[in-house]
Amino acid sequence: MNWKSKLSIFIIGISIVAISLGCGESSLNNPANPETSPNESTSAPQKPTVTINISKSAVTPGESVKITATVSAVNGSKLMLNWVNTTGYGELSNISQNSVTWTAPGNSIIGEVRVEVIQLIVTVISHVISVQESGVDTKTNIETVTKTIPITITN
Image (tube, rainbow, N blue to C red; front, side):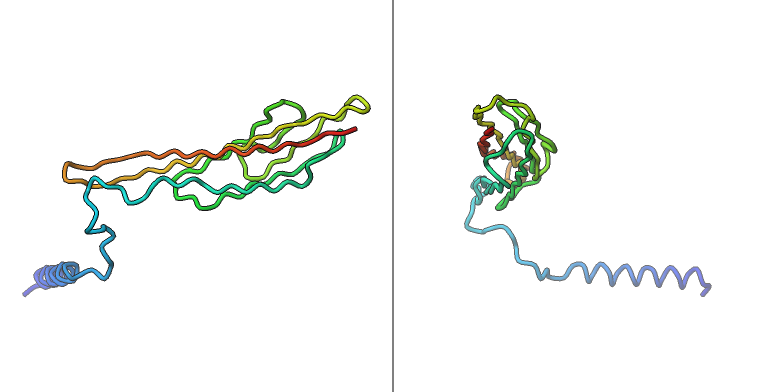
């Protein structure tokens, strides 16, 4: 028997062992609930929990405020943060990050009090794929939470 024949027998033997090991029982539990029919959904879309931290809620002209958002309880494949300077007063930076800085304009009329409104819109997009008797079913869930942050500018 030459070395090519021995190598072929060895490869066939290893393949048989690998296949037989792969056919064993799995140690993982079946994630499908046997009491749920294929058309039932076991989880409802989950709204994110959003907490806002603000360094100060009242400023003088030219001062900056740091605003940080913490998002928890998210079961999604994509999380988007969008900060909006709704009144357009002052300057907002890093609008797609979880932490932004808003700077009040440097000029104002003496005795004037203004209220700036910043909004945070949190969007969570999740995709649910389920196998049913009729085929594969896909569903996209979109959940949004809006937080409003008032900031007072006094002179």
